[in-house]
Image (cartoon, rainbow, N blue to C red; front, side):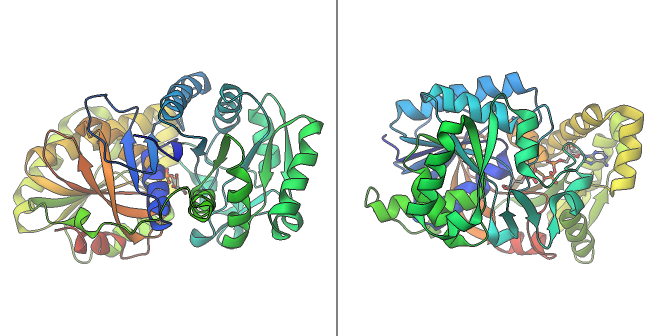
Length: 425
Ligand SMILES: Nc1ncnc2c1ncn2[C@@H]1O[C@H](COP(=O)(O)OP(=O)(O)O)[C@@H](O)[C@H]1O
Ligand SMILES: O=C(O)[C@@H](O)C(=O)COP(=O)(O)O
């Protein structure tokens, strides 16, 4: 298998978001969970997105996992590797966007790397290095309350500098909007200043097309789905790949029961749960009891058992920021987050054990833990439910064919859960 584009995603929802964008823009794409086992038969594709769960792990661990994935992608022909990060730049001062980007650049022989989380379709734009989420600067957006990576600074040049060895420059909108020649010239002018990375402004898709074109000339870039769109369109324009349609047969029915598991505490997910509660049974887990032992999990499974055969159910750990902070003050930020992920992943696995074959998981870390517990090695990419969230068909898993949706916390409209289930049969 020779691939044209390789990507390493720092979480699993982010990987499916990128795989969706690449597919929509003409690249046959597969999403793998980690580096695939040699025994796994992958389809013939233009792009492989390797999902890792490295957004919130120590930087050295993230670097090791990402560089191994990069080697695998290069050995399969990838000339360009995109490090897929969150469109809201989720990270801490300790990493991991800077350290991983610098390590990937070193592995490819060094040089400055273009970085942009812009994804205009979901309202993420970057101007003079400042990230806006919808109409708000990042630090005033709901991301200021993220349970694991609260974002308190919208100036990404500053954020990335705090995480990095090298210095960070800015590829400003005036040069990006002027097209590839001007953007390339500005980026080239930054190189001798010794910057290891440059944050690139982008507001419209045409800016990302420009950035995609110049990024493709380099071995590595870092960004969200918007940069994926630019790279995919540049590849199709270059004639190196033929450009393909989404295969509708990826959503052929799998039968079985359906359920939703939520661990995202993002505002969008909280709204989606409130709306779904009007039409589906919703169990709100007690996080204190989840942390105390297995009883809350057993109770949740027994609650679902009575209801599953009548239709989809939702089991959610999600809570509002005040509740999350209270729990974190008592048990610690990471310890509580990871313990809840473990619990929600065990619930997801029990539901599958009881016949669920159509599963929606809300939350990036939550999805990573659930997919790992289900031991799903890869996904084929189906049609889009909402911007950034495709239907996924499992590949190579022991349970047989399943349909999943891995919803990034902040993505999807208020009726997302019903909309997702309506597309999965
Ligand atoms: N009630 C709660 N209190 C504290 N943390 C929680 C609660 N419910 C879920 N979490 C944790 O919050 C984190 C949410 O992150 P994630 O799943 O990535 O969602 P998102 O996609 O919204 O970022 C996870 O670590 C999850 O276990
Ligand atoms: O780029 C994005 O916003 C998403 O693809 C993503 O990575 C979101 O992460 P989670 O909100 O943690 O799912």
